[in-house]
Amino acid sequence: MTYDQIFLFALLGVVFSLLIWGRVRYDLVAFAALVVAVIGGVVPTERAFEGFGHEAVVIIALVLIVSRAMTNAGAVELVARFVLSTTRALPTHIGVISVIGAALSAVINNVAALVMLMSLDMEAARKAKRSVTRTLMPLSFATILGGMITMIGTPPNIVVAQFRSRALGEPFSMFDFSPVGLICAVIGIAFVTLIGWRLIPKGEQRDVAGEGAGSGIFVAEAGVKADSKVLGQTPADLYPLADTHDVYILGLVRRGKRLRGFAAGEEIRKSDHLVLEGDPASIEAFIGAAELNPPGADAHEGLTGQSMTLIEAIVPHNARMVGRTALDLRLLYRRGVTLLGVSRQGQRFRQRVRKLPIRAGDLVLLLGPENRVNDAAEWLGVLPLAERRHSVVQRSKALFTIGVFAAAVAAAVAGLVPLVVALAAAVAIYAVFRVIGPSEVYEAVEWPVIVLLGSLIPLGLALEDTGGTQLIAEGILSLTGTLPVWAILALLMIVTMTLSDFLNNVATALIAAPVGLDIARALDVNPDAFLMGVAVAASCAFLTPIGHKNNTIIMGPGGYRFGDYWRMGLPLEILIIAVGVPAVLTFWPL
Image (tube, rainbow, N blue to C red):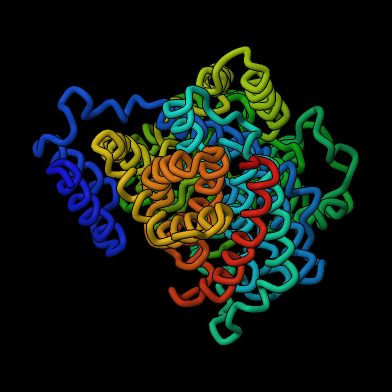
């Protein structure tokens, strides 16, 4: 072994140990390792930061932004609204939401798909009076499985595709992953639906569906638009829709005056206002579903004109708002922000929200473009609650957003433009049409992952250039002896999958892909089979909560412990190996 090989193996050993330990941020570990490698002379100075401009890094960042835009436009909600039900039996519910999660994960980032569906699953669990422990883990696993179907569904696929471009001259295309990925996803989802959820320990269940809600219950108003679907109906007719979204309809306002009683049988007219009570997310969802507008919405083009934000803020005793109303402050005219609701220890009000004098200790709900909301909060002297910031879904742009994304993918598949250019164009269109705000473009990118990937790419290249990956490949081949090629492929997938359970899956793919290529070359077989096997195995991290971010996200809300994951994850990983190896060899023959 040469000095460079020894140095890199030692450095990567330290990196992997720290990643498994988990006490130091993985992006800091990776960047520090890059600096050490440059100082040690194994990574040339001129190549130290080329990983940050690597096409795989750019594609991952763009996919995250596209995912945020799809969320902002309610594309996920549009799909889920028509297929989710709280009355289904538990296995049926798991099957339906798992299929939705897998399908969404194939076209947007699987973390974004999980985050959106997790809230819907928790709401369904609460209404059905069951624990989310049984459903969140199957949902997480399903979104991981669905990400394997396309190139952009999960970062390991992007890494492997771009590695193939550098090593063999052409990347995997968007749907090259689909045959194998789809088979693994279908078999995996069938397992978690029929068997897997039953393996989750019953003793670990607890009712956590409502935990962390913490938001105040607000009294708010919503105006009836000329094209609203509630025109001609009565408040009583809307009770089922309100119940679905956990909102109470408290009354009806007409010509500036609240009608006496609850006006449950009064026909709703244009320019009426419904008085609502609920938490901010529920109020926002009901307003969107009923096609209503908050008061003064025309000033900022309603809920659909641009990227909007709802924030909860507490009113201190010295705030400008104390003792004054939104009308007194001319809040909408001066700041372009609407006072959507007020929470005062569960108290209900007869006054209209904009005419209600604010008291110290009230919680107020402010609606507007993010920059204006922040400025207005500072001007009003209120204290925003950072953990209670809600994005307003621009539901009227859902089909437009989906159409732009579909066109971008079609252009890339047809070879008209590279995928990275197509995704960049989609992001630009979303920004121009204000589906996503300027600050959201940066917030959507998971920068620790970008730093991790940008730092490890030069290390991976150095390992290849120094012959380190070839040494690993030769070591594996020497251990396998006279085993058939399919068994060597299975062994590589098992090792990759095990590493992915404890390391970041991007880091695993960066190291395993060149090793797989070197093994294929040594055996003189089709390298695509081994690269595809690496892509499948690197994505499947089901044994621990640290192998994949989706598993980490559900740990708290689901009430899981570290040792709960392997009970369903181990048989699932064995199943994926059993199904994945023949699938790879069928579609990518040796």
